[in-house]
Length: 383
Image (cartoon, rainbow, N blue to C red; front, side):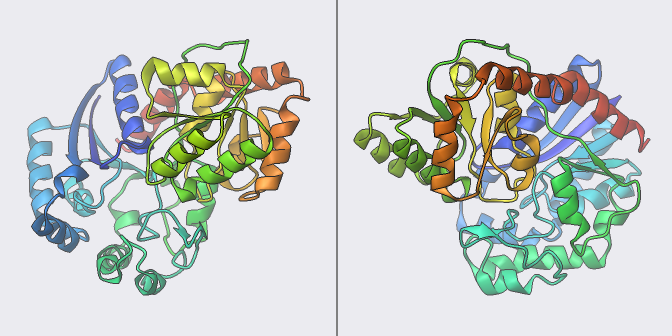
């Protein structure tokens, strides 16, 4: 089978970008041909390009033309679209339809419901636009790039494609990453066709299981308010527990200052490869503290793959991935005292059982072999 992946990369490499690369590798390892059409947000670096991207966000005629030419040259059996905003635009689905090429899309975020894609505003989850076809609350609050004017363009895009039934008529199969995401879309104004939606979680490689852990907590991810990094730090300070932090983001300096002032807080910066694997393998537990409606939670299953339990809020998809006192522990979202109490509790539990359960969760649900099988089933269903 020949698959074309279409993806709009972010300025900072994120989970979606990693998933696209990993899916390419497992498909090729299974004997399939994968071609890629990828654009990068780093190219939106001048005022004129920003204006052009904003205006064409609802429907890019130029991208549609380029993509049609790319598809005619490559002649794939199926197209798999990942992120398509802001550069590619929903015109990609019209290009595929005109060429009679079946299209699968993975909705890694909530952009077709919410102009900032996060369902998050003013430090907490926001559902104001879930049932609003016109996205007026988003414009009032300037949810896209903190600008009311900029927000008009994604709102216009969502309203237009809702009216045109783009999501239900021009996409053959929609992949959602979790039941939690499916429930969000179920209560929204968007209607998918029956049998159009499947659940296929993300996956990660099996890099091995280390039985002997060190006595530290681990945070991996973007250093930002919505990811709850400050709460994690404050809780570890209160619990007098070692914390290693790997990542980058707008709160970089704040995290650095904490590490200078507190001996138990260690900031190791952005890590990948063997360095990141070593952090996961040796950690007593991973802490995740996102305040958002995450569509999945890649760091959670990466932690499970190493047999490292996860401390997560009982809220959202993290609360579904992590089973309390089985493969990790739950605490109350955005509650430092609750998180502190759980961190202190870790040392008094049977950690070997939780490690084995974390590893078992990975092996049963999130391996490359299971994922490529589900991916190919999705492709075959639209051929």
